[in-house]
Every structure is written in structure tokens, then in C-alpha cells.
Image (cartoon, rainbow, N blue to C red; front, side, top):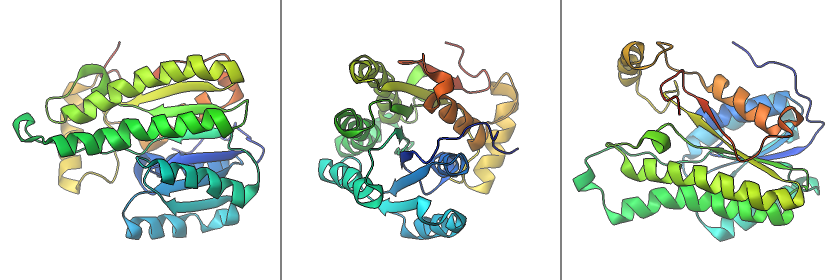
Length: 254
């Protein structure tokens, strides 16, 4: 399965958080193949970042990956400065993909862990969206990566579920605020997706569980999420804002 080569973003600039692996990495690749210049960021894993850079060498200077913590306002400002220094043009597309997910017993969830999860999953998109409305292209587009957990709740990671539910609400608020200056804001809500965050054994278990839990009887692929993101960023979605697009194989139908 490969990306549909139907978008040409004509060299516009995209900022993608959580870009070094999984869904974020796929989004970066598909944007690059659709003629975007992409500034990605990651927070901690230098080894994964180096692998990502090596995988994207074919795109030359059109792809840059920086280490930044999106929960810190200073690092968010640095990201916008990074883009300005690289290309001297405003950012057109913002994809808030960075996220923290730790599963465990609710009784063991600490307030520190709660704050860290909401810091990355919610404070980060807030800070980035706020600055994007101030400094981004005035015909720009934001896509936030939420989760089916934010729509159904989650007993294994309630902090994650809460942050993703709030992110959908933030998406709608920013859609109202952004419309004043021509900026659209939407969300994509993936269900179970095959990514390298799972061990091989856990992924095999999930694939078996998916046959019973998901109407389409399989997990999704990062590319299927990325296609939804590119659609919402593109002019094909020019009259869509404040929407949450489910990419979950029928796991949640709300």
C-alpha cells in the first residue's frame, strides 16, 4: 500500500511533531512525497531520530528533524524560529502528533505522570496552535492526532484518554478562532494502528484481538492515518473545519 500521489503542496512548509517514528514518520514521508518542506521534531530518542534522518536522505534539505519538547513554550518558539531560519517563509501546515501513552492501573497513576501526559498531549498542541494562529500562513491548516481512547475513555490509560478527548475540544475551539484569519483546524482519531511502539509479541496479540473487536477485523496502518491527515491539510478539505475524522475500522462509530 503506497501513498496516493494526488497532492502537490507546491513547496509549502509543514511542522510535524512526534516525527521520528510511527504515524508521525509516515506523515512526514507522505508530505515530502507530496512536495512539502517538512520540519519535524522529536523529544528524546536520539537513536530513532538518526534512523529517521537516514531514511529521509533522499529528500535532502527539504526535511529537517530537531529535538524539541513541545510541552515547553520556549521550545515551541524555537520551532517556529527554526522554520524561519531554514526557509524564511511562514509555516502552512501544523500536525500535532506527539503523544505520551503509558498503560497501568488507575490506582498507580501519579499526579506527576498525569501532568507529563497532558503536558505533551494537550499543552503542546495548545502552545503550537496558538503560535500558529499568530505566525502561520493565513490560509494554513492544523490537524491534531487524537485517539479512539479520547472518544470512549480508557481504563488502562485514563490520562491519555482525557488528553485526547480534550484535544478534540481544542480542535473545535481553534477552528472557531482560526477561521477569523483563514486557518482551518481538524482532528484525526485513529483506532488500533500497527506501529513500532509495540513489541512483536504484543502486536501479534493485538492483531488477533482485532479480528473480534473491530468490525473490519484488522488493525489500521500508519499510511491509512496519514492519508486522512493529508486530505484534511489539503484544499480538497477547504470547507471542513472543527471536524474529527475517525480512522478506526468501525471500532467506534460516534
